[in-house]
Image (cartoon, rainbow, N blue to C red; front, side):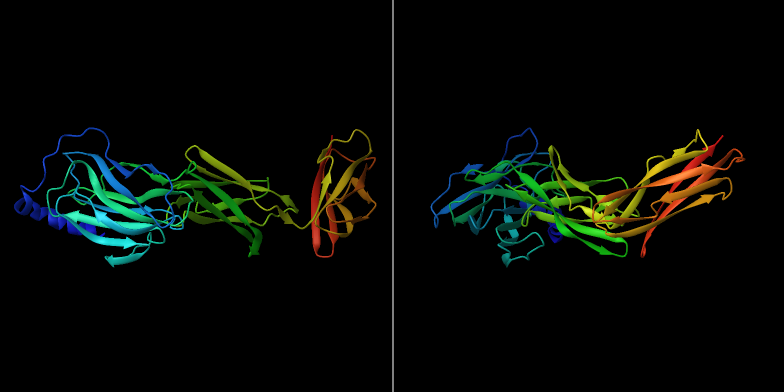
Length: 380
């Protein structure tokens, strides 16, 4: 940042130029604090003016402050910022950037500038200041009788090396404002290409929520899903960001569900994405491993349709191909969308079948749609 570079040069000159220019202050304990004051105000008549002070407190003598780079947002449909007035905290203040609603009489707008955003960057060539005081005052014109948080974001209080001073922040409000929170939505429909489905996951803050939101996905078995990126930073001016939910095309037909969870601190919200259907049918035997007690035995096959309709022709093949006979009845079943039918796989061992392990593969075919399942037969 150019401001930080300028601060480093100016601080080197400060001892000679401003050695006696800092007002005396008392030692202050506690963490440095950036505050929007008053913390709340009642709604004013549309067209009237209200003011909020951007203040600091607990700035240490050991780590004096020589500049700032601050953004403050309010919903400009409720309060529209009209001007900034510098405060008296920082001795010899020079404001290098001033932007209101992304309009800058001097300095340049950054990516965080926009409607309702006040952007101020300032520095001093002096030794810096400690203690408590007002950095600047924002004057707003009341537009409506609604409410809005007054949110400081991307804020930096700068020390004599041009580095950010760690601090806490207390936000303000205009009118009754609810608890900061966020919502999550998954935007349908699924888009498919090159073996991958994807949808957009959107996160939107409310009531002045700012913070990092972590995203995760939990899917039906057989569905592999990832979200990118897994973290979103939510804050002014848009209070919204988006990620992409990717799902590899499952190899097995079925109806799949997927939940997306968004978390930030103690806040957590889960939403179910659009169901994902892989069209086709499955064949499920009621036994996948059989130890026959008799020469003749059987298992039931359940054919299940997933948004699929057609006549499925079935056949059974045995490996090794001697010692066990397998036949399906009926050999053809008609499926309706999301319906199911059954067939029976009848098996018989030859009289002289030796102990062995057999595999019976059942294959169902309807045009280009094919599904296979395998049954293991253990002959002692």
